[in-house]
Length: 553
Image (cartoon, rainbow, N blue to C red; front, top):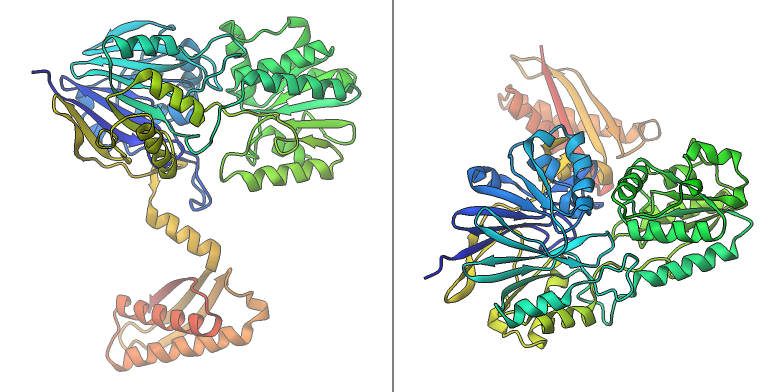
């Protein structure tokens, strides 16, 4: 009887990002992707959000390797943190490994891994794992679906994908190979990307964006053009370069990640640009503006990105103004809409024209919509199905699509982060849970917890009131104060009468405590906090953070 196969989900099921799943065969663990999530507005001060690696650290001796489906940060960005504690090889396409290597090297943990490139269609043994790398189209080149041939049949993980019949590089999603597996060995379990599972129809080809960009370049022949997009979107960068070269423009990159990724893609032969048509950003000052095309980072309104600095007039290489047209070739990621709007506003204030996805089709998604998802399900014909990569609503819609396409209801598992499932001869079922909470990065990994975030939200929304009082350690009598310092509750110079009233209330509370014989620190602090809290709430209907500081003499 074949041994069971287990799957443990550490991220990506219930949110966009933190994609990380672990497959167990013969007691060994294969990590599939290891990504980050970017913080939302409920996480003030947080830089990144990681999967909780506790389970992996507890089982570090069993970790065989990590396979990467593609090079986006939500799939590779957490490796530089995990490799601080574990050591394992990483498999992926040359471009994917190149994109991941940059962060790993910066973190100083390159010595804890070996980067092993694989090519389209390659099948190799990684410990007890028989892994096949199947090409798929996405918004970053050289992505893979991975088919893992296990004792319990083929586990097929789609990675991020779409069906693009006219891709920029001619590399299509290999549905034929997936169909061959389905009609020979069969797909025992399919794990598939759910990002666009709510969206009907089919995702537009990347080629269509190239047509729109060429039209925009032809319409703005007398202006300098600045195009912002994701630095990892090499296909989009190629289309921008092609449109620039066709209209006689010289290209320069702006932003560290854009420069590094363009250099990497050129080195790997994935980006074609004549040497005569690309210059360093510092050289564009010597060129007529109408001959310049700048490819920039900052399409998501990131505060310190190149485009945001342009909008604020603080970019040291480019001062935008009348005569500039900025094309933002990306949709705002949910949560980034406000930042992108502010950037667009700032660019307009400086006199530039701005073209974005709300005005022209200058961006298409890299994720399959319902029509393509149904195609994959019909080709793969999985016996069992688990939706991955998406918020819970996306997973729910994807589950329904699978049922519509003939997967029995009891063969579809709707999982969340932390779930463990087991595939046996008898079928698939839940087999426990592991820790899978958010690990926040704010300068140092793990130095921020939910309590800290809660305090930060209170400070941001309600403010803080600090009460400083000095008491006699023997009698509890107030010797000095109370002094009230406030930020974000009321403006002290304009609320002196309110603050004086608060001082009296706190003093009375301390006198009552002293009369009852309370002279210890904790009791006096509690009296100060309660008295101040009641007063603030009754008088202003607000709940700022109350910080009592009691000193004894």
